[in-house]
Picture 1 (cartoon, rainbow, N blue to C red):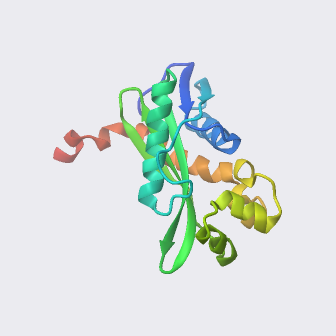
Picture 2 (picture 1 turned 30 degrees about the vertical axis):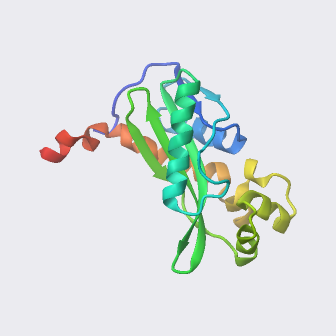
Length: 191
């Protein structure tokens, strides 16, 4: 256990987004997980099938899964990755979290998430008025298209945790399922 299945060089990864922060996260996560392999990362704009601002973990995971499945259909790839950020309410507070779904060409799926970060009330007021997190943080922080750069995580931590790094953690968590694929089968449960 630990290494999981060996992948051959020049594996193709389809990312269901054109967002540079998400593409960087996928590229770095695969390089960290399998440093001896060569990965060709291709991105494609695909629909998430969820609202512009998901407001639950369930909706965010569904959006990430839809993006991964749509990317796999759009591009010939060995893996497809969908990433979807969302806001969740926990004990009266709101938190930002990014979800990653990785699907291989055989249909096996890994799911992981980023860390969670509290969303300030000033930003939540704008979201409550119909804005998505990205445009709300641009207005509050005076940034331009932060969702494709440092994101909420980066702005709140002075770039100690960027959006790409948060998503990278989610992708690494999802890839962990592939390292121990045998544990996720019904045969593993029976033994």
